[in-house]
Picture 1 (cartoon, helix red, strand yellow):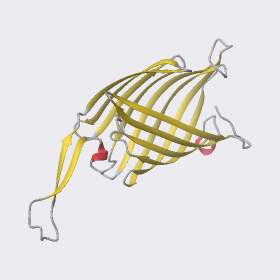
Picture 2: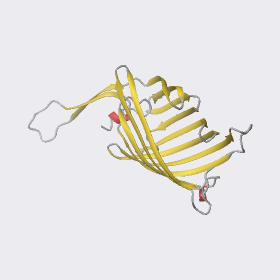
Picture 3: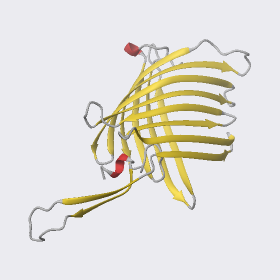
Picture 4: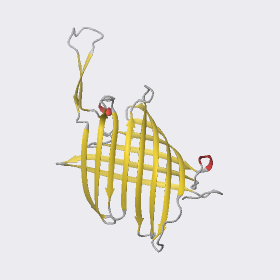
Length: 239
């Protein structure tokens, strides 16, 4: 399971080595079939709010032959445009601790609330796999957000948000960067402001679910998320 979860191999087979069946200890033979390291995914969809939407994803899961993962994703619709670059270092300082980095830029329009936002930021996550598919995470996110009401001609001055989060994740996807099968469930708690600085001061809890399944010649995906936020303290505010 640990070998297959790296995302580097298409098939992993474990079998006992030839030998005397009466031996109390026998060696195991692990046979692997390597997965193509590079991928290009295109997606087109339609939603009642976003209308037509399109996405493009590039991924390299074994860069330099060292299991380093790099990727880029772009998504566009009339309500949301995002671009991001991601990378993963699976073993930090030779230990079973992974480092994931993300640089992103996002434009979003909310027609119901009549405002638009521009967001640029970075996020770094250290994760540790402690039992099969269960992973614990510690993340830091720094964002710069600009808001514009539809009635205004210009965006308001940028506000900075600095937050720290703790998460517990169960991930059974075949490949985190190029998922075609499996699911991911994440429970996450965020704290922003206070000693971390920034213009936002809040606590937030989030439950997120991703599920992938092959359907004929395509991949069907479901993404669901629910959040609750508390900014009711004396200095509670959300930029």
